[in-house]
Amino acid sequence: MAISRDFIQDLHDRLDIESVVSSYVTLSRAGRNVKGLCPFHNEKTPSFTIFPDTKSFYCFGCGAAGDVISFIMRIENLDYVEAVKFCADLAGVSMPDENYDDSLAKRRVRILSANREAAKFFNAQLMAEKNRKALDYFLDRGLTPNTIRKFGLGYAPDDWRQLTDHLKSLGFGEQELVLADLAKRSQKGTGCYDSFRNRVMFPIIDVRGNVTAFGGRVMDDSKPKYVNTSDTPVYKKGSGVFALNFAKNNPGKTLILVEGYMDVIALHQAGFDNAIACLGTALTQEQANLLSRYADDVLICYDNDEAGRKATQRALDILGNTKLRLKVIKMEGGKDADEIIRTYGKERFASLISGASNEIEYALAALRTKYDVTTDDGRLRYMTDAADALAGESGIGIDLYVNRLAGEFGVNPQSLYAQIEQSKKRKKKKRETEKKAREMEELQSSFSDRSNPEKRGNIKAARAEETLIRSLMRNPDFYPKLKDKFSPDDFVTDFNKRVMAHLISLIESESPTEPYMFNESFSPQETDSIYEMLRSGGELANSLKECLDCIETIKEEKSRAGMKKASDMTDDEFAGAFDMLREKDKTNKKNNRNNV
Image (cartoon, rainbow, N blue to C red; front, side, top):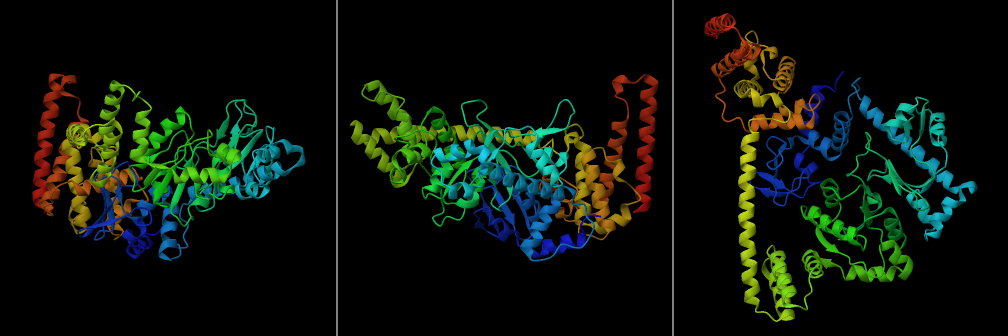
């Protein structure tokens, strides 16, 4: 049994979508609506809009759409039942006592429980005398027992089944352990074996205190250096942030972004308890959006090598799509934060923070390393690139850097301003070209749909189906007069057929026919399409005639879709099919006129 529709309607009425979303997105008033940077895609200009009147949101950039429940599903990476529970807690109401299907929610709870027990197991193994080498690894890196305890560090023994056997003794099944990626199935079909072996372990804990995943590191130079939990129902690579559960509470609203687990832990031990590391191969927009919920400023502190410099530039690009203010800490005296603190102490690192450069200063310094500025050619190339970098600045900021560069290289400031203006014009032209390309792409994609791929080949039918759906959602009282004239099976496209079937069930149960009532049975991407269907379909006549015209078109297109292609028919087949279709059209039109 599903969660009752009455409860969903009441929950929807209780929650203020603007208040809920503002916990995740910085919003500003735009007339009757509010806007902000979309948390679901990269953008610098706000296109994420909340409509308080309908308690819905829509992003004009990526098409994400929905209500407060579907927003929580996306932003918290929850399934439908979990999102409803989350929203119920926000509204201060209890879930109904019903036998709804929460199998995925229960599976997630079991995986989190298994992870918690695994973390306890790894920590106990670290403290066992027989595994002294693992504890010595951390102690030799300068970590104290208190720090080891704070981060729940551990050790996975050099054994194929010790963790698996331990968790099975606690009642966990092999399937659960495989889903959690704590174990892997043997190719020989002889059961499961531990995913982590002979590695020091770093539990990854989310902001709610759940152990969602693990990172395991070798204690020598063997490869692979790290083994990390793969995607599971409770963890997605590219979304986790190590130590954010600690750093999110720092009063300064500033985060120090470093590369690795040990950098984070060393900084916390030294008193910099706002250090975090993003997990995965590279910083993602999802991680950047998460950071923006807990900070106003981010100091990027990546390794002092070529890979670190490339990662820094990528981080600037990704984080630049948020409201965060950014600075870059220049690593001087060591490869990374851990090495600098162990070699020179926390005071040295504090001085590096004080000397952190902003985005433009970092960009100018990075450009300078590319050229020999002692030569005329090198200076010219550097000044040209510097002007390009400054083209995004304005006001006092641009004056400061122009005067600084002009004084250093002995050039007329007006020459630099002229070069910057040329760069601005080039960038503007490029943006306009890209905008036209996007508009053309959007125009072409309007004939297709991610959720309804059949639409592209059945435009006429799909548009009639969508108009009928929209009309009945807005005028459910039309349905009793139309229900004998069509069924969802008449629809040509499967997605619209499913939407109509669900809509009919809502109407027949006298439930609201609002888009939020589709969350349970449709994925977030599919609800995007439902909202887009309502938003971009043009004006409705809101009449029975309009509905009947749509039904007639749908049936005509269904008949055509069911016929053989004309090129594949014999002459007799083609003539017979044509006569049949013509007679069917006449009958449909006559019946529709008689029954209105």
